[in-house]
Image 1 (spheres, rainbow, N blue to C red):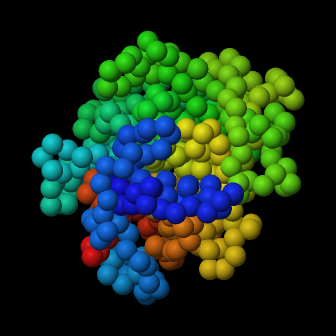
Image 2: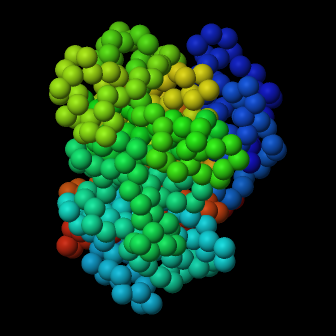
Length: 426
């Protein structure tokens, strides 16, 4: 679903034209087909539709859960770490909930999947909702892994969970499955994994690495790995590569003189020995290590041909145009001016079906912020009284009417609370 035809939008010239083009791409649906690199316009809408975040007014006083919301929004707690989300299940909600996503079920309900960022005993848990939004079950989907931080939903209906340590790998789980269904995907690399996003058009997966000298990766599936007509890849054969800014030397952080607010061409370089820890490989290669440095890669999402990702080391939100192979910074806290300079400690992110980029703060002042298609920044909510924590796992319900997120170390035991926010519909 697309709310605005690109052909109907007049574009200025030069750099302003490119920025206008990218703003318009914010509004295209993530599942849109592509023709000549542009999203095909399936349908135009003028009025509000379910799932769109309405204009946000000032935050109200904290509710009973310590959450400040604009007028018209409401909040409830759906899980507390160490407690059962559902009386029909013995599963105790996991400690330190992190990255998450939702998946539609055949009966009209959905599943919210969430990582556990705990050393050695991390994994993935899930809450099952019925069509009315009532919690009807919970279960563990993955165990025996370590520091499961972020990840990503796939177009074929699974969750990819990344381990955030130097020997970390990506695991694939089924939202309505069991731990017996979990599979490790070593072809996606060995490094401090954060998030994963899938570009089904180009049969490519993108991955972030949470290291001060980290890289931004992509995995290009081999033809035999994702054959023509196949619903999904095997994720066992392909090329693991790192992004290299064409205007910057390999192994360096972008110089201040490079204008990252404008599109910068990128190249992709195969990593050396993808089966080994990339931190170790870089240490061995030294200055010969390929790829541009991205300081602390975090959240990641694919939407309408654009891959959005955050880097916490410099408080930036990036946008990679997968058709043109250019990247630019759409938000930089160091350069932001009032009223947009409210987003810091950038971490997990997601994108609504309407193109709003939601970014959770790790640090800052525990806010969940929205970057609008025109790059204005608004505060959607704030959690108070939990400054020791961070916000994680933002994800919309399949119909877009609810938003899930966690305070990773919230609650009396500082083990985590998971919330649901109801979005008012115009």
